[in-house]
Image (cartoon, rainbow, N blue to C red; front, side, top):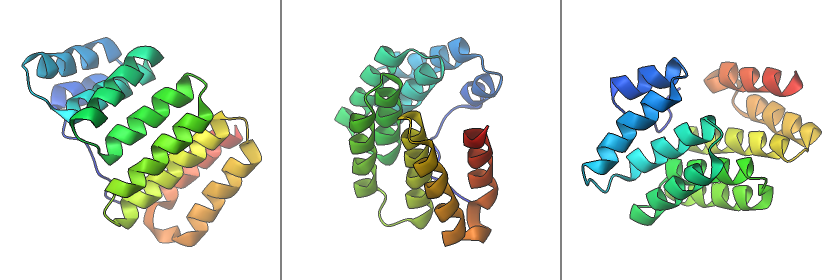
Length: 157
């Protein structure tokens, strides 16, 4: 399944995979410091900072990304940052805005719905989250069921 992946350097991607968030953040900060108004670099750095539990910095970067150019990944990053700060309602609203920029791409819609299920879980509505993911799997079981099943297992555990 293809998702709207962000363009990031191999160095940043490898650092993320190794969970070396400091290195991933440094490489993205270099891109940003070069003066490029790159909404993807800010969105990526927001996700890295969120993964490192630096919620305020993640929120700042996500907002900067959206200010430069609204995008699906910018709204996903904003949603994750808000959720991490305990603002579940704001996170859901931010994620809803991502649907505006998905251009009807079903894979992007499914990704947004999956992220939304995770945010519902983070807001303490575990049963509703499991139902959402199960319904997502049933809706198109052949497409990205492995990804949905992985999230479902994590939520169940």
